[in-house]
Amino acid sequence: MNPDRLVIALANRKGGTGKTTTAVNLSAEWGNQGYRTLLIDLDTQGHAAIGVGCRETRQLSGAVHQLYQNPELSLMEIVQPTVLENVWLAPADTDFQQQELNVHRLRSAIEKIDPDEQFQRIVIDTPPTLDGLLISGLVAAQGVVVPFVPHHLAEVGTRQLAKLFYQVSSRHNPDLKLLGLLPIMYDRHIKLHQRVVSGIEKQFGKDRMLRGIRNNIKVAEAFEKGLPICTYAPRSAGNMDYHLMALELESFLVLDRG
Ligand SMILES: Nc1ncnc2c1ncn2[C@@H]1O[C@H](COP(=O)(O)OP(=O)(O)OP(=O)(O)O)[C@@H](O)[C@H]1O
Ligand SMILES: [Mg+2]
Image (cartoon, rainbow, N blue to C red):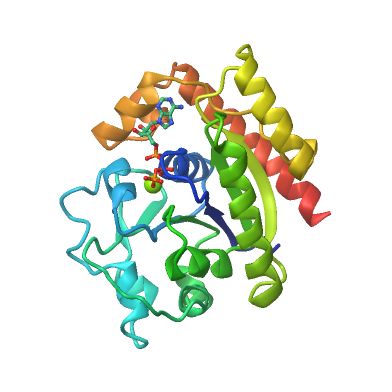
């Protein structure tokens, strides 16, 4: 992985697994650590903008999906500041509908960012649908984090994502790494959660499993208010979990580099 510019995608073929929530809170953690961070919203639902307080302004300066329609457009032309320190947003175009797209376009747009404007951390929020946008996010990324809710269908969802992951890494992006699996709304005392997490560990390896994020209403409230959990409820369980998750992810990154 490139230590000067780390690109991570949050992905899961299943909807509602905490991809966007994690993208926002991980961006906030990295921003707080002093990294110049870019949050790219590839999901045409456009929810990431809400989470970083850009509800009103999100499409004024253009959207990341226009990159696929206009080969001349540069990523920096559509990047806008957010309420988070050191965090910028490349917002989604909620009207975007394109069947066929160049899945290498986002990667080349990231590679073309001027060194003076460079981001040290890039977080890509991807859609749950299997389409060119999700593939394009995986082509652009160096590492993938898979948030999942430890319920019955989680194993199916992660298996589907793993299949796509291997297709993308063999066809387009041989350096792509499955960085971590992140249980969301996780209670380690619930038997169903234990069973699902250990099933997924068997599939991908125990060393890929992050400690997880508890079910905490403050996390959902923070998102609605357009703030990261570290600002909205710094003493909450949700903030503690996201803070520890960012530190744990850092240790996974060190292992992958080593
Ligand atoms: N730790 C948590 N505790 C409580 N609620 C949470 C937690 N994490 C996420 N949520 C809530 O779960 C819902 C789904 O989260 P989110 O939108 O991040 O999922 P997603 O994977 O991005 O969904 P989609 O597939 O539609 O893009 C949201 O309402 C969010 O506020
Ligand atoms: Mg989402």
